[in-house]
Picture 1 (tube, rainbow, N blue to C red):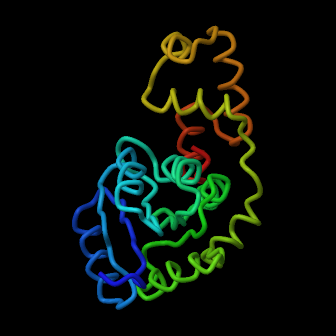
Picture 2 (picture 1 turned 45 degrees about the vertical axis):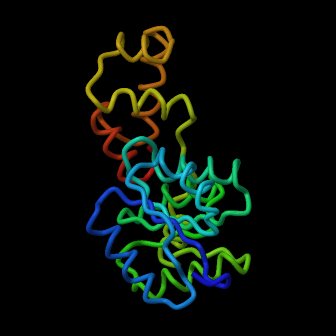
Length: 205
């Protein structure tokens, strides 16, 4: 690998997708995929070990989400640029990705050449955002859920009862009920299961 090639990490839990992206990016003469990982919690160690210049991260991965991994990378290796490339083009995800410090946000159905160009552009200090998603995020508005409401709703997503959620989050059952009630109201849902679905669909969880 020559010194002028961009050192890229790919984080994607689906092997076929990851390997296809690696193959496509490797066709670019100025890009070299130096590391591939399948879990979010493997991102930072790989970034540090391989001196990665641009990390391309999926959002939904085991161990840690791509958004959480992006925030870690930005804290521990601030020079590394982060590109989020996801199947889930949800406005809420875009907002959370930008808040985590991500430099680009693309959906995976974009052409491979667009991903390669995003890698080059973030290295030049630009921010790259899918224009359709950017417009949708502006129209959608900010996530109305507070951090604690998100925590409680996420804990309820596996069907846990209030007592179990209270134990997990070190809250009283009454407090859990209040947070769930507010989350249901803010999502316009009829019950907690629907509130979880709405929040996930919008990328708020």
